[in-house]
Length: 244
Image (tube, rainbow, N blue to C red; front, side, top):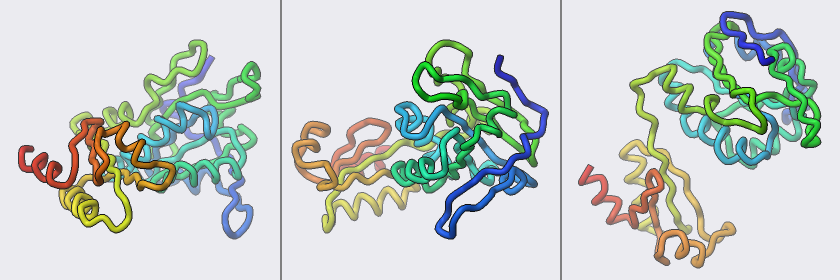
């Protein structure tokens, strides 16, 4: 039976973290004392839902949470520090702090340690998120205890809706570019001017013209997508904003 710890203090443990200076021990108080922190915990680094949705969306909304007084967003998993460091680099998760609960001590004391031996994972964390203020759990969103790996309530948007129901989540923006393209620079400058964060996909990094044509139907850059809607090039982006 999973445990809801709302109103209780987070466990006092030490996490072993590998940095450029060697191994360091990070205490619970280092993370939570006199701070407002969002924690989301998941079954494992590099796993599909965790990599495609759970972590990226928290990373995307980090600045919105910061405006609402959140000091830090922590992603926790029962993985070792080398795995978590590699995953952070792979995800380019600059807005998230990844904490390795390598021994599962924090997760166990939170009542969230589950047996996933059927998948060859051993003991892992159940998927959940929580808002912690000065070391006290204010709110927990725990995924339902059903078979598999449910992902219904521990997402970033659910947390944002709890913290600030009236805050609109930013639009998801992606654009395909290539180095030295003046129209790409123009599109990026316009998005920045309008306050839009964006994901830039450079042609040549495993993405070629054929891929661009398959996705957008065009072979020129930039190609801009906002909330999965294909906007087009820099001139069409200007038109999009003038019509907004």
